Image 1 (tube, rainbow, N blue to C red):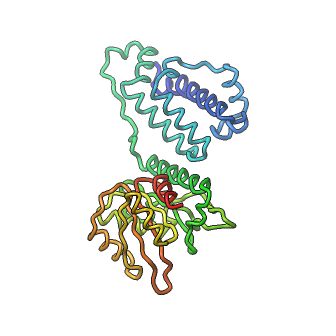
Image 2 (image 1 turned 60 degrees about the horizontal axis):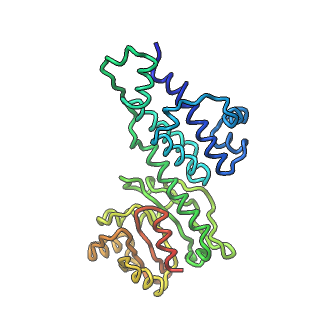
Image 3 (image 1 turned 120 degrees about the vertical axis):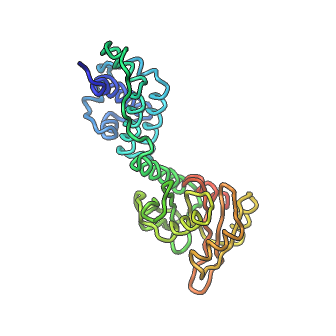
Amino acid sequence: MKFIEEVAVEQFLPTVRSMLAEELRDRGFTQREVAEALGISQSAVSKYAHGDVSRTEEIVTDERVRETVAEVAGGLAAGDTSRVAALIELEVLIRELEAGDLLAELHETAMPELADTEYDFTVHDPDSEARARERTLGSVRRGLRLVQNTSGFATLVPNVGSNLVEALPDADSVEEVAAVPGRIFDVKGRAAVPADPEFGVSEHVAGILLTAREAGVSVDAAVDVAYTEETVERLAAAGHPTVEFAAEGGPDAVREALDDHEPTAETVVVYQAGGYGIEPIVYVLGPDAPSVVETARETL
């Protein structure tokens, strides 16, 4: 008697680990770096590299497996994907392949008696909160890499600092919005990101984003940049709706301004031109963190 979990352990895991090791080596990783990225020993990596671990051809050639391996390896190599996020993606793939799919077929090969049996397995929720949180953090990391790799982005950072935020799909509080702890600052002409993104560390920019969502604007991410008339004009000229709100009015002013304009574009710009003791700021709102950074870069 063989359980489907044994098929996953004996065939899927060695095959996918060797595929991941191969992908990472192709991206320039050393054996030590591959071992650290996958949480395995260097001797195991060496065995994968020398073909000492048998691979199941049906798994190697499955397009979904190949796509997931490439996506996970790319994320690990770029630093966008944590080991937890990688594990979640592979766990989701395993459960999908168990449900009357590739792993179920391999299970039937190992247990021929199953072929004539009603066959179904309960799968993990592919839209779990853990997966959503890791994907959101990965998106913010990609956006931050754009910030750091954009020459001149530091000139867009307000005196109070900037932040890049992205919300979970059903977020209704700042605890469900990922952002940069401590904000982004201009340090000697470079946009400095002090730490890896976390949830619940932004009050202001996350608050603007959540208020816009409450007003019915379909956006999931935001970045704030320094205000100038030219910045607003360039964003408007690029086709992004621009909406001004009263600096002293707080979230209510943002909500009222958006209610009056009802923007439906993918990317929306809201701004305030300053007030007594209040620095003027432009907020770029859009579908995800990399997109809002790309839009902000249009003003350079």
